[in-house]
Amino acid sequence: MTIGLGIRTKRVVLGVAALLAACGSAPAQTLAALPALPAPSVSAAEMGQARPIAAWVEFCQRYASECALDPSEPAQVTLTPRLWQTIGSINRSVNAALRAVTDQEHWGMPDRWDLAEDGAGDCEDYQLLKRKLLAQAGLPRRAMRMTVVIDEKGEGHAVLMLRTDRGDLVLDNKTSAVLPWHRTGYTFIKREAQDAVAWVSLGGATAPATTANR
Image (cartoon, rainbow, N blue to C red; front, side):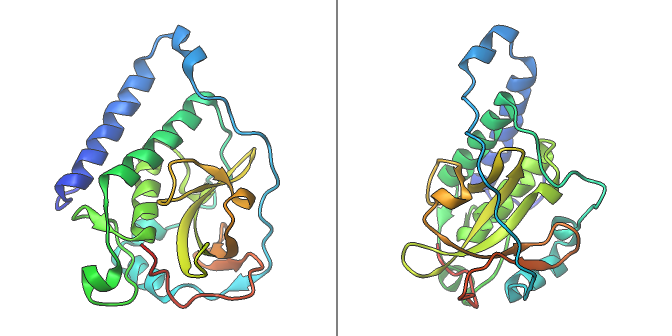
């Protein structure tokens, strides 16, 4: 366990460890109880290079391993019912465990990306912790891309895009449902690249300077 994690975050990590242990030891007959896979859908198209979020650059300086990209990893995951259950459980667990707070309230600055070590954070902190836990569960980091959108309020927001054989799915702190990207109602601006430590455009016309939405 990472030293310095807040009590709330430690509970999430312990809960995920218990979930993975349970999944590994579940009898074959429980497969019928696993959730149905999402229907195949279209993936988001890249539109060239994009400028990274400044707070992401600073985050990568502090947490280089969280931003490192291994080109030998698969660029997407093949969903199975058991893996789909794990993804949904981690999304719900993190959403329930963390306390939502803006970076201005938390750190006294407009935008700071972090791993919610003290159990509190805003949108990108939720997604970064989810990616860390999913990577610990065996998912390739290269298939999990931090993504910037414009939300239903017209504000900058961060989600985690999971690239799968059934299309690009979105983990979001605003909902417990993991949705296909085109069903979120968001305008997709840009995401982390899959072939370099960089960002690519997703076609959205207006790029927010920050992702300060809790």
